[in-house]
Amino acid sequence: MTVEAVEELVPRGHAHRRITTVVEKLRELDSVCVKIQSEQCALADIRLLFDACAVKYPVADYLATTAAIIHSPLFESAIVKLHNDLPMSADETREVEGFVQPLADQPAGAPKKVGFATSVVRKSKKPRLAGQMAVQYYPLLTCAPPTRNTCERLFSECKLVLTSLRASTPRER
Image (cartoon, rainbow, N blue to C red):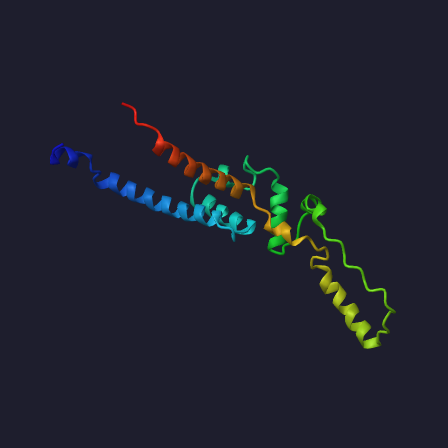
C-alpha cells in the first residue's frame, strides 16, 4: 500500500469529529458498565445511573423502569424506596411484605412506672414518629441485585468467554 492509499482511508473533517464524539460517548457508557459490575453498587445507585443514561442518550426503552427485562418493576421500585427511606405505595408494600422482620418481643419483666412528664413527652413524639417507617425489613432486601445488574454481568461474562474462544479458533483461509 502506498502513502496516498492510506491517506484516503484516514477520516477527515466532519467524519473525524463524529468519530471523536462517538468515542467520548462510549467512554462514558463504559464507565457506567464498570460501575454497575462492582459489588458495592446497590439497586438505588444503578437506578440513578440508568436514569442519567436515559436522559443523556436515547435509550429510554431499554433502560426505563418498565423495560422488558425487568421481572417486577414494583418490586425493584419498592427496594429503591426502602434503600432511600422513601414512602412506598400500597402496591409496592404488598410486593415486599414477605420480607417484613418480626417485631422483637418486649421483655416479660414487670411494667415500669412512668412519670407524668415522661408520658407527656412520649405522647408528643408519637405523631411525629408515625410518618417514619414503622415496619422493619430484612437488611438483605436492600442488597438484592437488580435485573439489569444480572443482565450486565451475563453479557460481560459472555464477552470474556467468547473473546478467548474466538482467539483459539483457526483462521479461515
